[in-house]
Length: 253
Image (tube, rainbow, N blue to C red):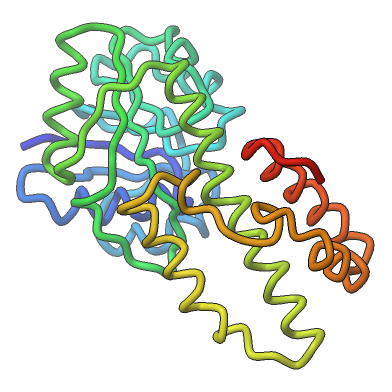
């Protein structure tokens, strides 16, 4: 039985806790957070603590924490023999080098506590300070997902930036679309089939091939109509993205 301590109670910690808890061969024996109120959910299922000095012996210590505190927390775990893992896409492996056995366990997905995910299909990117530790982390990951990939720190940094574009930025554009709809008394749900089709197209097409719209067609009349309609805050974004599409496809605005 693999025993694990999770440090953190945010979205990633929440979903990893549930995924590990559902595995027959993994037991989350403790969850740590410095705020007692954040531990309420986890205390229904396992031991919890607000004192980092009271962590239990375990095979893995998973740091599902804000990026800027990872090195500081890792320093406090340097006496532990278990493998110290962080879950960040943007933090390098060397942030944990104050410890003896360490690695990265980065699930490439967007997480919200009120939205369930099927962890078995989520890519988990792994890295470690030794071949032996890498295999142990691979074994851990394979118990909750079928997609385990060895990705080094530089690749993971690039992957995280790419993920921000395809996830965070695209979701922000949904918010802008919803705002424009609301301002004009249109139900945003009318756009959901379009959003779904756009996402599904890249299952069979390269994103470059899937591009459509007035920017690609160099439809200046439509572009000018849109710019005249938009408020200043949205006009700048529209212009920047239009220019980017045209630059990528070799057209002029």
